[in-house]
Image (cartoon, rainbow, N blue to C red):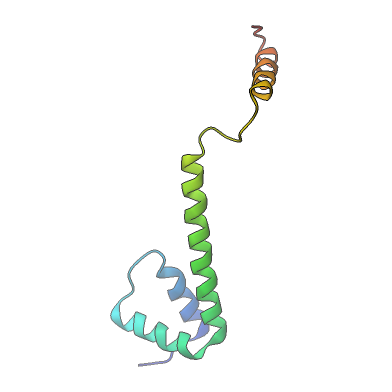
Length: 89
């Protein structure tokens, strides 16, 4: 088996986020990551980013109400929007 270059390894690390790597790809990548500190660091960073994005997406899905505002602040915003749109309440 031919040793992967760092360029090949970084491509496989990225592709592994989207698809299951084949047997040879997985083993080639594992071997490369075993000996290459920089690519191992890159792989950890990609995993961290992916987890952070998943967490952010989950929060965005559950946070449909926006920031917690006092009733008075919500009322001021409603009035300002109504005035801007030409509606008065």
